[in-house]
Length: 410
Image (tube, rainbow, N blue to C red; front, side):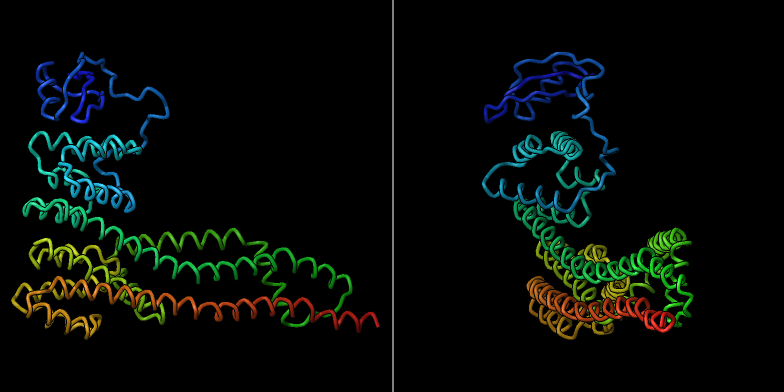
């Protein structure tokens, strides 16, 4: 049964809502457990949980399977870390988060988590009910609960979110620039072939002059694009969707593609360095949080987007399981730098593995920044030349027949 209530919290703020309970006295007991002083309570109607207007409706689907954006995770972890470091207890921190949250789906997630806390669940157990919280964050929170430093656990989660978003943003910006230039070339070719060339074709046809081979080729390309542009778009969409599905569903194909990408000049180093930076960053945080090495490596491995790097990490994990040291296991695979192997060895021998991994994460992030800059610097002149050659060829194909027209007129 549902009961509507109005109550005051410990900060003398008025709260109202709906609570499930078998009896009114049980509902009041639940509210008291939450630190609320009940002012008014009554049985609610059957539709008490339904939104009163379309603006309050939530179209997000099942909150237990809903994905949570990295930026939202960062805001939640960061705010929880700040409140708990300031001395606010977990229950009050959760209530403040619920009250301040504007997103309806996220608010429902936080409310259900808070209710689970009052029924005896730990925070990490409550988080496991929602697919939106990655396992790596849940493990850090679980370790924070075990050692009594939940505030530091939230701070570590926030740091991982921030670094992950920054790294992903750099990769996207690095790859989007050449992609933009390629799309620009394609658009220029389409406009010239579909809009400009047909006009010149009519002009030259009226003079009856024989067109040069390059002009005839461009005219043929123009006719093909005008007649079959829709087919080219359809084929492009089919190839793109098929490639994406194959990469997601077929592990062998995904491994082949990711291994090939690693060999592409300028692009490969960015992928490798960013993947190792993410792995080292998470390993550093997880080991410092007290999570066993083997579990930390498995958790960190799952966050690496490149399947080729991920497979190499799995080989290292397999070797570590049979008693081989991490640095010896890594030394077998060229994807791991010699400096990374050396630093891991120092960390293992000195008992400061987390510190060594943290330093390597910073190093790989700096190297990734340099690689991104190299790619941008190299792509600008290359694509300028490509655009110049393409446009120049089309312009020559349009202008060259004019000399033949002049001879016919003469």
